[in-house]
Image (tube, rainbow, N blue to C red; front, side):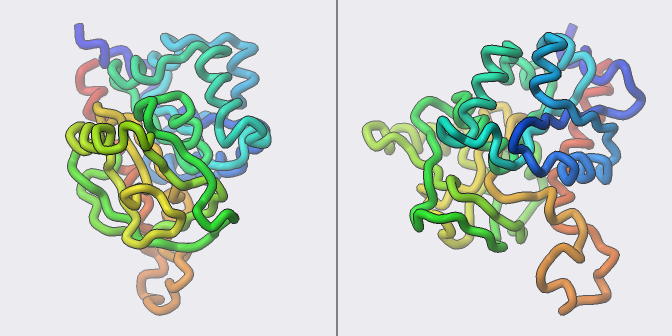
Length: 265
């Protein structure tokens, strides 16, 4: 039996688990974006999940998507996302690669992306550090998908998204840079790039996916642009006031994939 059949069997609509915790501050916006894409959503604090001893099997059985929102988890005291990553790996014991292979989808936004990097989802030679300017940045920027591996980015062209981070510069181990980047390109991991250079990320990388295309992390905030009126220049085209923002397409892609997986049930 295809292992993906275990997902989504308990609800009529696919369901998302949005994690929260000390320092996360985007869980409500992230949940709303998924609801706009027709998902059912639960927001749960990671410490509560640890107390409940939620297993990977339970995650697979109940949720089609796991979302790690933005924020400053646990103060980022051991570098951005490190404490949250350790809690997922060693307190919950979740293997997100196994979750993806069983049909699950994972989205990490900003601090959530940092968590995925700290977990080694995209490889041991990839890390993230302070912006090259040495300070927090908050602006809007254009990003463009690269390749066709990432399920979340299907059909997207260049889109405007906001960024707001202090540690968003993706770096590749200098000892193995050429080899690592060539592998990333071959596997489709380097799936999203900035049109400009806002923070000094190598190869202008704005986001990465795993080789399955199901685990996706990015520094920009798609959940902050699900309505056209969120864009700072929306009044230039007031006729589009009721239109969706460009970020909503990522969540709609996830819904289509989750519904496709459910056809195997």
